[in-house]
Length: 418
Ligand code: HEM
Image 1 (cartoon, rainbow, N blue to C red):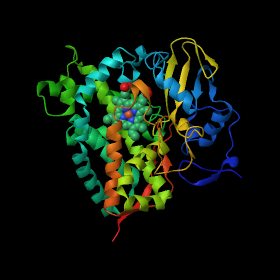
Image 2 (cartoon, protein in one colour):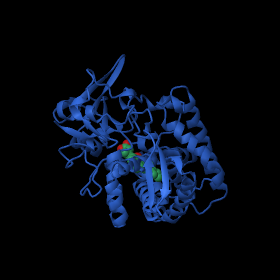
Image 3 (cartoon, rainbow, N blue to C red):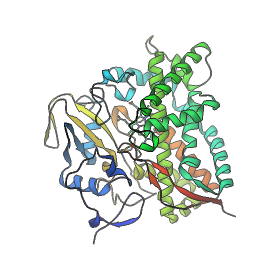
């Protein structure tokens, strides 16, 4: 009998997972217990370019194979991020009432904006955050060790991503907790616990946008030595960023950078708890951590998908796609594609090569990839160095979302080894 390790690492019988008669990847309930790997596996095998219908509306193409996700991510001319948006059912951008984010642009606007912010967010400045991250996480650890029993997601994993991005953008300490709550509400749009569907999400976006505008104005009045100032004053052929474009970039960093990294840290911890032998190995060989971090990012795949729109009639692996149709690339499926990864359902902390697509590919490749890797490494380095034991004290709960693969809660006990 075939056996497969699913997300949480628990052994389950693949044949016992039933495939819905009509697969609807837009139905968030399919993701209530984590990534529906049995459905993706079925699609990869039987219908890799699947037309996902939408009742009373226009559906989308769901791409689940690594090679197709890669091909679409590579070709931003034919598969646009700008035309009709990047979330599954985004429609016309013009009606959204906010400034377009970098992720929602095609060249030449995307190229110009990415070049501009990259002048401020240089690798040197980003790597310069490592000392801050270490100090910050050391305090987080002290506190959770005092608590002994805590929620790994909110008490441990969420704090460093929020603090690091805030530090990077020069957000005063007093405002950081509020910003974290807003980010959470923006990301949890499908989960009723975080205000999904009742307008709170729109309020959160507006509040965050006003905050970012004020931050820009305050740096214009008084420049500081931070990345926010560097971005605001960056110059590209005499052009610089406008305050509203800055606000939209700030929102992108907060929404793209906090939930995702938090999810990789909590999901990585869960996988390591399921595999204590890996935890021991990393304790003995801390140099193996960067490779393990990459596997955590693949294993968790914090963002399930993004969307593109075909700019002309085309085809993907023999399937005709018409101009204007929506094409959704499912990273969570591509990262478990049997034809690309050796034993994809094995959490293998020594996996090399590991060319996962969790951070996207091509023109829009994650701008925060190095920061995310740095943060995840700092978290596990500190826990391993201090000889921390983490034990699960109950079932983890997932955020109800088919967009981010996040844990909402994971009760644990944390102790320092004597
Ligand atoms: C493990 C954590 C993270 C994951 C899984 C992740 C994932 C992704 C993915 C899949 C994309 C591609 C979007 C597309 O193709 O449309 C992306 C883009 C982006 N990410 Fe991340 N991200 C992470 C952390 C971060 C962090 C920490 C930051 C900020 C410091 C960040 C900022 C961005 C930005 C600005 C873009 C847009 C780049 C562009 O459009 O050119 N991300 N990310």
